[in-house]
Image 1 (cartoon, rainbow, N blue to C red):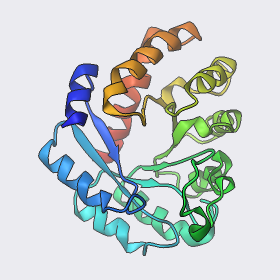
Image 2 (cartoon, rainbow, N blue to C red; image 1 turned 90 degrees about the horizontal axis):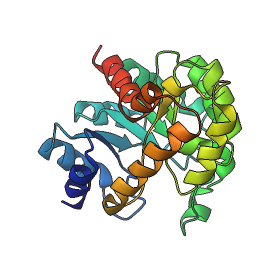
Image 3 (cartoon, rainbow, N blue to C red; image 1 turned 135 degrees about the vertical axis):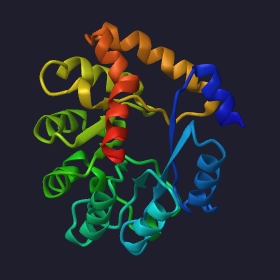
Length: 239
């Protein structure tokens, strides 16, 4: 209910709610499924896939359960490893966008067990995937912070690659956008997102509503970052 209240206060039209699988000790895919079934007009579900641990058939399972897209983080190898291609092939077939964590990942006690490395999640690891699966919509989280420049250049070369602008390093992401706008940070493939608590939804929304025009984005571009670009992705899903 905190999520619903936070959305109402921030006037959120739709949430793409992501799971972290069992990393936090519960089956979050099931929780996400319960949420989008209870609030179908507000919530779309992105189910977690653990590359190298889950069988690729999990993509079929999540699609059959009504998930809109996939969330991927903490792979056992770099995202662009050949052995992960069966997951991406299925996602492209089902028109399921994939949200990849990109950039430095927070530490966790399980890191040693799963051999976690932030280097496996650099933005450049999405380049081969975008080229190999041109109909797959790929979203990189956090503008790849701290490799934001790398993320922006990749957007210029891959029309099926988007990046969101959420994260704890919000100010530095904004500075990176200021330096690259009108060059390779494409306003038509940037997405507003947040990974904060529902109580802070309105605060982060206000930050970007003020900041984006100040660093050079037009009114229409700001509208697209908040709404239009996500709508374009949804139209691609529904055909």
